[in-house]
Structures are given as structure tokens and as C-alpha cells.
Length: 159
Image 1: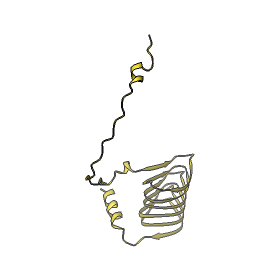
Image 2: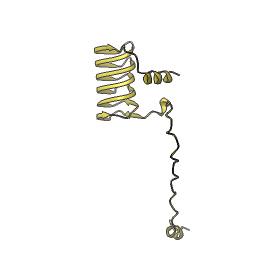
Image 3: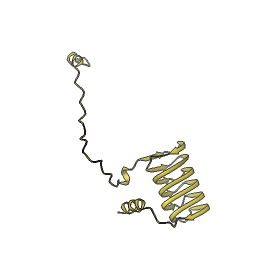
Image 4: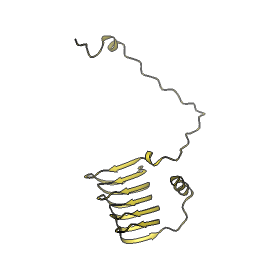
């Protein structure tokens, strides 16, 4: 026994659409709390994928494929073994296990893993290079004090 996919009564009398409830005008704006690293807006470029252009509004970038771009004002970038980033990166923290060809500015820490290569200019406040990691080009240490909001977010990230 089979029944029709839609009942005749439901088709004749569709349910009314819910009406949105208005937000009170006196309600203060929502406070932004520090976000858990797992909740950050993340762009993942998988192996076999190639991306070109400018990347914005990503808090975290994970590169397993090829990226030819400019990344501005992200929280962190991670380049996996076999991943390649060509261009300019300006982030709080960077972890390089693949290759970056261009300029990387890490206002916090720059970690070059044993399989990592930085070709070009590396600017950072703290630098860690594992045995086997390579930096070919210029290294510039950032000495000016961190901005208050950057220092606050770095302190919250370490908690």
C-alpha cells in the first residue's frame, strides 16, 4: 500500500511562515569574547588545491596545497609539509612546516619546523627554528612594543 507524497489538505492550507521577533532598541550590542582557537574562521587549502588572490577575513589559514596570495591581518597561518605559500603574510603567529616564498611578518612568534623553508624576508618578535628548518634571505626582529589589543589576545591565547 502506498500513500501520496503530499496530502491534499497540506497543499491547500500551507503552514504560515514564522514571524521574526523584533529586537528591543534599548538592548546593548553583544560583547565579543575571546574565541577558542577551534572556533576561529579557518580557511583550509587542501593538497591538490591552488588559490590565488587576496585572503581577508580568515582568522586562521592552513595551507596543504598551493597559495599565491596576500594574507592580511589574520591571527595565525600554518603551512603543512608539502604546502607552499607565495606572497606576503601578516599574522600574529606563524608555523611553517612547508615552504613560504615571500615575506612573513609574525607580530608574535614564527616557528620554522624541521621540514620548513622560508625564502625571502622573515619579520618576527620571537623566532624558533628546528634542526633542519631553513631561512634563506633576511631576518628582521621586531622590537617595538606590541599594541595593547595584540598583547591582550596573546595573553588570552596562552591561558
